[in-house]
Image (tube, rainbow, N blue to C red):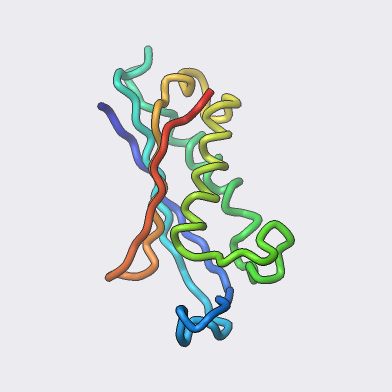
Length: 134
């Protein structure tokens, strides 16, 4: 299986509900490093997994609505605990849609799987990985 990974980052604010989250119940900020890996069994006709520039552009577009935002105030997250794991799935869904709709360029239909990893700090990260369903 071949893979290519691109990286960006987001800065967000949010809070959590419930004793489970301890001090994270208070409003706090996070800077996430975001890695998106694209997997395919064979290289395309250009000998690449995906166009790096288009992958970076798609990632920036997916991240834009949440970057520098208070997630507690965004309607799409009303009543949702925006944990690292949840946000990795949210970003995955956007990137999988970009693959399905051709935003990643010619050959993106060969991408079978995507992994989105959010690095919350140097000691903690979470991810979501799944197939790109067509």
